[in-house]
Image (cartoon, one colour):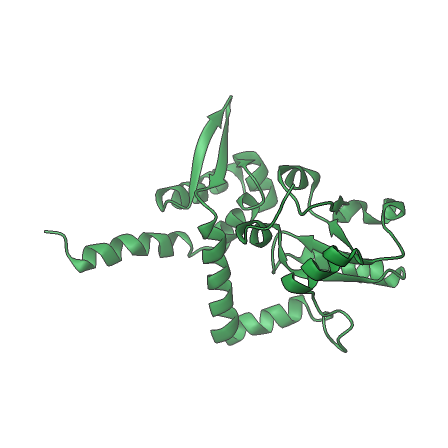
Amino acid sequence: MTSQQDLFDTLAQVGKALGSGHRLALLERIAQGDASVETLANTADLTLGNASAHLQHLRRAGLVTATRSGKQMIYRLTDQRIVMLLGLLREVAETNLAEMERLVSRVFADDNPDGALEAISRDELLSGLKSGTMELLDVRPKDEFEAGHLPEAINIPLDQLETMLDALPRDREIIAYCRGPHCVLSHQAVQRLRKLGYHVRRFDEGFPEWKAAGLPIQ
C-alpha cells in the first residue's frame, strides 16, 4: 500500500537531481533554448560522457526531455516552472547560506561600491524600454540569442564586444543581460563598457526569468 513516505521518496528524486553544480549549469543552458549534448557539454565544460550521465539524472527526475534529431539528442526543459524552481532555490540559498552570500558578493564585487553599478530590476527595465531611454544588449553566444531573446535586443557576444562597439548607442543607457542572475557575462560587459565611457548597467535577471514571467520575447 502506498504510504506518505513513498511520496516523499519520489519527490526526493527531484532534489537529488538538483544536487549537483554541473546539473544546475546544464539546466541554466537548457533554459536558454533547446540544445544538443555536444553543446551542453561544451557550455558546462564537461566531457560528452559526463554531460550525458548528468542529463540522464535530470531526465529521470522529469526536469528535462529529449528528442532525437538525426544523430543528436536534443534536450529541453520540461516546462517553465523549472526556471521558477531554480529561482526559488537561488533565493533560499542567498538568504540562508552565508557561503552563498559571500560567493555572490565576490563574483559581483564591483556591482555596488557606490551605487553606480547597481543592477536594474525588471520593473525599471520595463519602464525604461517603454520610454525609449534604454537599449538592450544580449551578450550570450549567437546560438542562444537565436533561440530566443528580449524584444529588439542587440546581440554582441562578450568575446566580440570590443570589435562591435559601433552597434551600441551613445545617447541611451545600455542594459546588458545574459543567462540569469548569476551569469557573469553581462557583469563583465558592463565593466568593459563603462571603462569606454558608455552609460551601462546589467539586468538583475536573465532571458529565462523574463520568458517565465510571460513577458514578450523574440
